[in-house]
Image 1 (cartoon, helix red, strand yellow):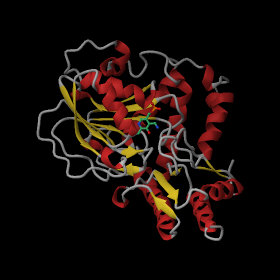
Image 2 (spheres, rainbow, N blue to C red):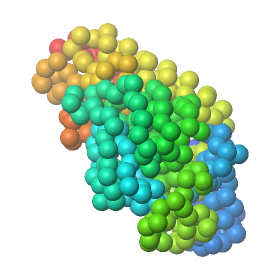
Image 3 (cartoon, rainbow, N blue to C red):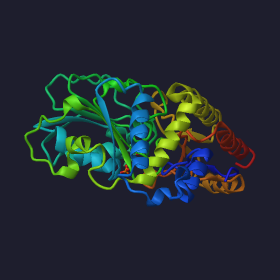
Image 4 (cartoon, rainbow, N blue to C red):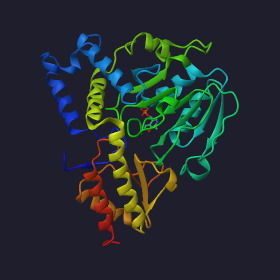
Length: 355
Ligand code: PMP
């Protein structure tokens, strides 16, 4: 496994030690003689796991003493596109459209009230982040996507607004320091920097809930999930346990500040290489480049075949761009090592002699 350089956009690479501990827990979970796959979600063993995971998920972002609650729910980030307006929309919400996932969130919100797109980068194929966003009017909430996984752009700062701020951080949560406490609801599908697919994390400030007069089905009601401590129904026990292992790993690395330094090094190396070589081009505006998803294309179509061949020889995998955009995308989530990025930049350099 160590010889393969996996740049998958998600479900993504996790640290080797997380795989090992998760595998061990399938065979014998913490010396209970039972598999983690076969313990009750209401057992004391799992309640301990869930509690630690919820606590650590907040602590690592320094949100644990600020009125936030952590929920581990199912349905992926896409379910939150729906759950958010269900819980927060009274009449009108503002959305910033920076890509495919924001667009999907907007489509869902329109079923619940008026959606005002307060800024958009659709005019240039979502290749940049709109600047100077001013939100004067009264809105129930403002929604944005901090990292555009598909096109490869990322917000440097949190947009300023008086309305509650909601953020889809699916592809950059826990990757960097950010003004987490300026956001009232942060959500993420787990399968990038949190853990495996099948569970999502919602960090919500309790004070923003309970304001809509709408009748909310229980499965979609954040307050119901909070009242039931994320156990309204059978939780994804194994995925939550693996998230906990990964969050513990992050804490051991020194937390978000420490991992951000490594993430910066990885992204800098790859972008520097792309900028130095004249036959490869970054896809997005330089100021808004994502440090998690690096997108690039080659000057000429036939170079793709050479690059694919060299990647295969070097065991560089899962690097094709999203099917809607084409080109290439290297995802540099927390568990991707600098050594893997060096292999990739080595492949790009090697292209020099082949084009
Ligand atoms: N938002 C973002 C930013 C994403 O990258 C993704 C998936 N890659 C989603 C939402 C959708 O997540 P899910 O598949 O968990 O519903």
